[in-house]
Amino acid sequence: MPRLVVVGRDRSVESYRLIGASVIRLRELDEEGLAVVLEALADCKVMLVEEELYETLLHSLKSRGVEVGEGTVIAPIPSMAEGETKRLERLNELLSRAVGVELKWVR
Image (tube, rainbow, N blue to C red):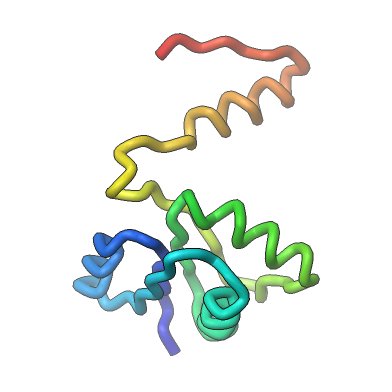
């Protein structure tokens, strides 16, 4: 049973094998790719997913009624190929929603 699974498009995710992770490389998260991810998700404790696939994966899981087991974590990681992350934008969105006004931030 792999405890850590990394899912991504870029071949740089292969580097996670150095720490003992099981790696799943996908071009797109289609039905075939989703089946592979679901199989891995059933047996892992932590699944790291590249940002580009993360939202699609969460949407696919929710639409199929798949619940993640207790003690299992799915977390986004930035793509090494993109060089840009959307985490700050998501954080700004969450904070804006929490305080009830749209917060502006300067890059």
